[in-house]
Image (cartoon, rainbow, N blue to C red; front, side):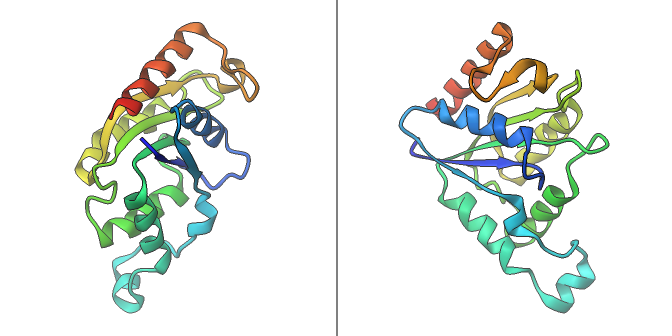
Length: 176
């Protein structure tokens, strides 16, 4: 796998999900990593009326092109009130109007983390149920609870069992 696309499902500039996804992607031997910033894809909130009046924003086409150019995707979702962040949901709502199978069958390591003990498990479960219908080829998934207790930029995941789960997930992505 040569080109890994890293996406944090949030517009937060200091995203813990970006840190986790970047760490995972860095474990794929020999891969070039391209991390996206959702702030580069800001669009009006999706509505059918807006689409009919103005068409689909260029940012949706740009996002789709980046997905299609990748060999694999590492996506870590932030959880807002048990669901996707508004910025992420809006991006994939618009993009799916261009291509229903927006994830393009790319091998995907799907993750979530949060400061809390559930580690974004609710949003991760929603994505695991939904993304296959949108062309998602989820080869592995991982929820990292209590991010600040279990992760550091210098050492990665500190809990041995969670670190082993991460290694297995990255191996599945690498083998895809």
